[in-house]
Length: 245
Image (cartoon, rainbow, N blue to C red; front, side, top):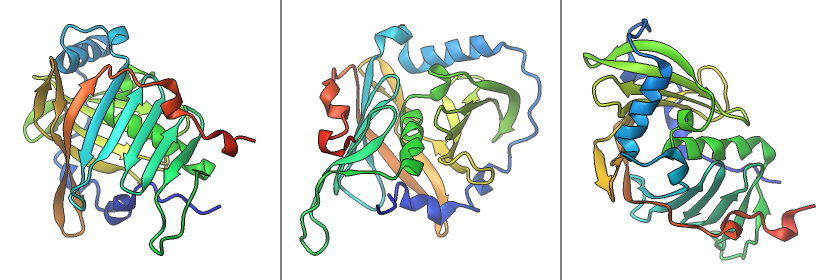
C-alpha cells in the first residue's frame, strides 16, 4: 500500500514552525479556572448555543497553492469528510480511506483505497483544527504566557489516536490566537498557526483562516463559507464496503 501524503506543507515548515512564536514567555499561573476559560472560549465562538446544539460543521479551506477549496465536514465527535481536488477522503472515527479518487496524472482510473493506518491519526488532528479539541476531549491547562504583548492561556490536548494540539486562547477575547499542530505526537514536529480575524457566520464566530511560516516567508490558508448543523448523512463518512475486511 502506498503511503498517504496527508500534509505536504508540513514538510516545508518542520524545523521552522515555531520561529514565529518565540515571543511566547514561560507559562505562569492564571487567575482564572480551566473550566471558566473553556466556557468563555465556547461563548466567544458559538455564542448562546450549548455544546449539544452544535452537531456538525462545514468549512471550505483555500490554500495559497490552489483556487479550488477543500470542502470539509465534521460530524461530532470524530467523523470527517474532506472533498479535495483529487478525490474524497473519509474518516469514520477509526479508519480513513479514499472513498473516491480522480484518475492519476496519466489518466489511469483509481478506485477507493484504504489509507495507511499510521496516517489515521492525522484525521483527528484535521477535525481538531476546525472544532477545538478542548471542547471535545480532556485537556491540560498549562497556565498563561505572552504573545505580542497580550496574555494567552495555553491548553494542550492529546487526541485519542496520538496526534496533539496546543491552543493559545486570548485572555481578553477568548478567541484562539495561536495553535500548534502535531500530526504524529512526536516532540519537535509541531507547526504553528497564527489564527486570522474571526468572522460572523449565522451567529457564530470563526477565524478567516490561519497564517504559517514556510521556507520563503509567511503564507495563509483561508476559511470561507462556514456553516454549522448541515445535517450530513451518516453514509458520507463510511469507509467503502469493498475495503472492509
